[in-house]
Image (cartoon, rainbow, N blue to C red; front, top):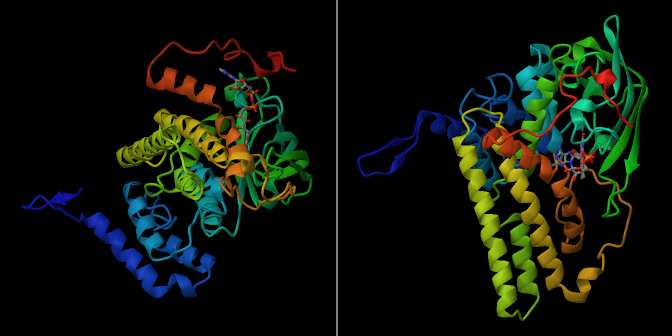
Length: 404
Ligand SMILES: Cc1cc2nc3c(=O)[nH]c(=O)nc-3n(C[C@H](O)[C@H](O)[C@H](O)COP(=O)(O)OP(=O)(O)OC[C@H]3O[C@@H](n4cnc5c(N)ncnc54)[C@H](O)[C@@H]3O)c2cc1C
């Protein structure tokens, strides 16, 4: 609770003071400029400042998630390394899934190197025949003693080429209806039988991949959650994914809209209509930012609910429109790709390298992490209470559902 004193000024709550004291301890012990990022982040984890709402001993302090922003802002101002940039899927989705559903041994094993970016994570959900309908997936895991044998194909797997671990959902009971026959595993991406092949995007880069599993053996100890409970575990990943992609709260006027303002300043002179267009985009970006700040402050638990889809939905449109405006401001230069078309293999997901790349990359924002249509379905059904989508296969055994 934040206490207000007799003058109306906000005094620090005990929890806020604790977070700030620990930040100060960390910055004193390991000045960021003189410390390797992994060492700094490791100590941040040990002090409970990685995810303050996680339990003590697992990178947290058991406090409200809203205090994380206080820790992040304080450390960032002092020049600390940013935790999630190199491992966005691990930080945004892997960690909350492990802490919610993992065994004690799994939490001990996975969370720290995930936070320090020493072990990168990827998400192995989508398949050629199962994207929006991910519960309909076909990759099979068959039990063999203390192990599972996995065969199948995943697709669009971001950063699989640099990943140590993958969050894998596979079908373990084809006779059950689709949502009830799934099991969730953490798979070693270096295990025999895992093959990662690049998939090139419209930007010419291959951030993502196809991943083939041929008789890959996963120890049962690396199962996350119960057998047949894979959908429930997946929902934790998916809910966090939406906020991880669309719930960012960068400082005002930074991020995509900050880049647009730089392009605006570097081009011109501009007419009133262009100024009006840029101003409207600035306002939309700020409304999204404030909506996300408010949602973060209202969140009493770590994992967001269905309302988390609103930021993802809005962010896709805002990013597309901002980058399109920036390309327009560049005039004829906007039609040229400034870095050539290098067929690069990025080690992280860069959303804005230059206006042209951002314009092309942001086309995917309304697809990745759940499409805009699916976000609207979630918001319509689960937030607004509108009638549900038609789902004829929901209660049928998966094996009997026709598929291509
Ligand atoms: C850049 C990028 C990165 C990605 N990274 C990953 C990753 O790391 N891991 C991973 O597992 N996946 C990843 N994906 C995959 C992504 O989650 C899927 O592409 C997405 O869920 C859509 O699935 P789909 O491509 O199979 O399209 P489909 O599900 O076939 O959809 C096709 C079209 O039909 C619409 N549609 C489908 N169902 C409905 C419905 N019920 N109501 C209304 N409209 C509907 C969709 O909105 C879409 O317009 C990534 C995708 C992109 C573009």
